[in-house]
Amino acid sequence: MRSFIRRGLSSPFAKPIAFVLALLPFVWLVGGAELDRRGANPAEALERSSGDWTLRLLCIVLAITPLRTVAGLPELAKFRRMAGLFVYFYAVLHLFAYSWFDMGFDLADIGGDIVKRPFILVGFTAIVLLTPLALTSFNRAIRALGARRWQLLHRLVYAIAVLAVVHFFWMRAGKHNFAEVAVYAVVLGGLLAWRVVQFVRKKAPLRLPFAVNWLQKQ
Image 1 (spheres, helix red, strand yellow):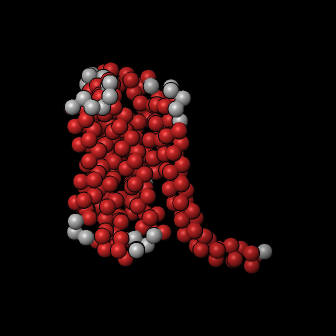
Image 2 (cartoon, rainbow, N blue to C red; image 1 turned 135 degrees about the vertical axis):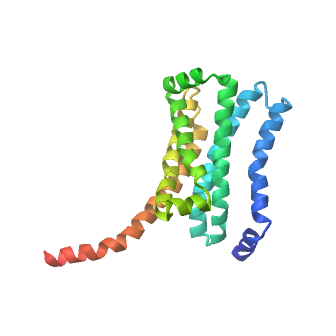
Image 3 (cartoon, rainbow, N blue to C red; image 1 turned 30 degrees about the vertical axis):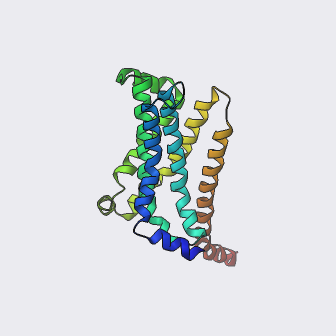
């Protein structure tokens, strides 16, 4: 079964298919809003749904490394950059919908809203932090920054994941509807916890000789 999956992931058609699948929500959202099929308020539906897809794709991005490691599917790594760029794409679409439908592209009103409403500030901060990650998701940027600095920069995704969940939580707090928030929090929390465990495991063998030497001196 795993060999079959690996062959599929290695296919030259795998990335184009993944690209089309990641773009389908955009076509559905914009097409539905244009045809007025998104309920009584298609503008609000576009704004909320673009935020939902940002979170879903963020979960996918953070799930790639655990799946690659646990399931033995190294081919998944080649989809991470594309998925990350789609996270930014839907985040910008979310910001665009808010700026247009809620604020009418009035920069003064947008700035005032960011300062006044904490959940807007948190969401805006997440998009600001996403921007350098999107701009450096190319081989030339990796070479310019150096692998170590590039990796440190892209660890911002963990902070972004936390900010995204907090933004969603505060947005739903007014309606006291936290069921969906809890799902994202559990999924993202589990994916981040897996990374903490892996980090501790990697550091433990390095600390063991120091601990043994210390005990021998006592």
